[in-house]
Image (cartoon, rainbow, N blue to C red; front, side):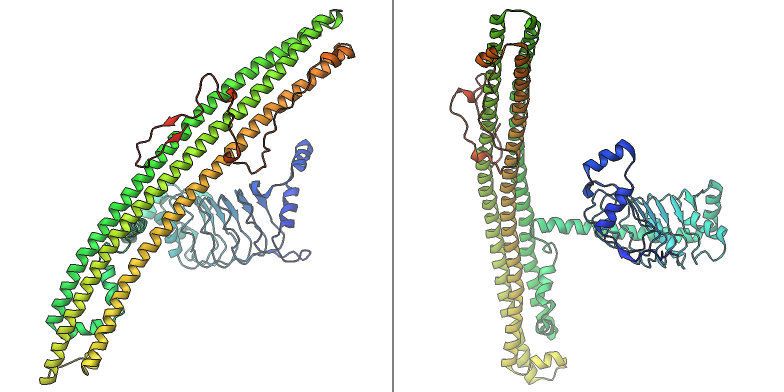
Length: 607
């Protein structure tokens, strides 16, 4: 039973409570000081303890997506809620609260340890998604039926269980433990005591007959689930091809499902049924052709998509390798320049006590040349890398345009053929309506000259020719409306898909290009800062070792490189103008290499 602390008001979890709890868990000493300086980032917190706080409601945990362990025991919580965002949670302690129902755990698929000891729960339910559950404590609750033990058979990882203190333990702990051993064969610990092989063998003998029937029932249920999953997977695939519910007679049945008059007319006799069966067979042939077309066209579109990504990925890989090689070459030259600079500084340091100012001045000039050389190479690197990225961006832009045109052409081909099939179905329906009207008129004529038993529904239609024509027209319109709706659904969905898909590709490539530009700028900013720091330290060293007039006259001057865009700027490769000078060439490399692509997408991809 949960304990209420009179000195604390019942409350809701809020940010203040969370931050206070995290601060109390902060380590002491130097580690605590460093942690305080860094601050608390809720998105990165992995463990949280909120115990003995009279918490009534769970809230404000949505931002703690990295949480692995959550302890909320010894409060007055009445409902499990507010945990959907904790997708990485592995341990959840809700013991000693006032919870009545197990619920809202669907998103916690990684949960391994669940403690609900000492609550008011009367049934095990809503835990189907906890496929990784290993330790479950549900003792001291209000579970009355032993069938709840059967519910736990669905958890393949469950190894430790505690159900002590529940009403279902009616015949003594020993008997219930035997029941547990028999029906949970994978369980290793019950009430934190290991289950021996002898206990398990005895339990299986005691419940052999019941176990056999249960296993047979579970096998049938498993087969049903597998069939349902296979059907759901198949339907999802058909939906991707935009021909869902066309593999069987769903569309045909839908034409009569809510058509009371159409169904009633079928009771006129054998002639009406012959017309109906003929309509069914001919319509199903066309529907099957439409379904087959949808699957074939879907595979053609998927192949186009595969070839597109194969081409794009190859181009990006070529660009990546080329850029990496250039960066490695640049860094190698940087190391050589910086080594020369350090060697000069060491030589100047050795000449500090001599009077050879002419030699010192020569070293200063050499330093200046080296710094200027590195700044020039850094600037050339910026132009080179940006030119590579710009070339890739422009060629991918062309590739995306060609792909969009190709995929739209494929969609147009499919929709035109699909519309022709729907037109055939409408023609068949018109013929059916005409033939059924003839049968109905003949039936009405025969009804006027003979006495034939007629159902009240059919009698209402057969009052006269006017009422009969009204009924057949209404049925005709309903069937056409059903066909038109299915055609509109197909056309609308596929056109929405192709637009969203192409837009997503374009937006994704633009985002990737901007990210690459930021990376290039960031990398070269680091190189610039290193150069400036080394140049500043060199100037200090020269100032301390040489006369002031020597440094002022020939000391190294800070080169001002061309500004690059800051990391936070919304930069795109389309804002970058590659240089036309020889700075864009390195050892005879071309700024753009063409990657051949065998896709039907007529494009070239950049390296």
